[in-house]
Image (cartoon, rainbow, N blue to C red):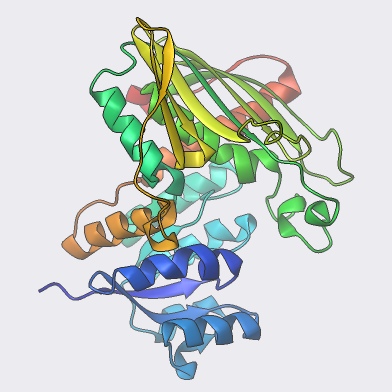
Length: 351
């Protein structure tokens, strides 16, 4: 039997404790966390106790972990601006890299990451966890069976009403440009890949306005995107950190696609699903399994698929190239804002 992947964690903060660790613990036949790296001693202690990692395999510096620990792979779950350097160092060490999104804070950095991965020869993937939720997986199956016909319109939104303390750059790194924060990097990133997956056609042109409308920080808190897909469909993305989008019975999150015969709407990033039949002009809720545990959530299912692939020597389900494409859309939205014009992306055949 193939032994479990020996995994080192670069970053042991809240997202790892709440979202990653339950997924690892649910698949001991596929992955075993054998080493930790985090400059915060409390993070190392908590995660070490939770995952039974001995104190001598808990490192303050991830470079020391890469040098000393016996690893097959690492996960990177640190502030955005650290992802690229850490991925490059891990690739140079010859281990597989599983990075939280985004893979970098610029397209140029992302290209450097992929070049390092090619040199190192180990697999690389980025966590697009909401593609693996029960609602999203079921939606993709319905669309593959023709639930919408030929798509012509897509829409996604993620509207949050953050409090001042949640947007304080002195205590929250996501509210700081230096750390790669902002609504489009941290929030709309997910809606972009969800929407493109539902439409089933790559984005080719991006028009957008990315702005700081409410909070007193140096990142954006509002992003509006108008997208044209290679297949001709049009779609929109609206993301905000300063709009109460979940009030009055309306979901703060949705991603939907409409086509020649119907439509599919994914609610709350995969915890709800509705289907529209154009002939009957009616929406119908699609029953999903009961609320999944954290281990069965998008993160949990993503990790199960990824470590199964790594254990078998197969490509991971999300490629570095697809993550780069998502980052290109984010970068194009910023450029479209600055230049007040649509920005063209490379065609899929040219990427």
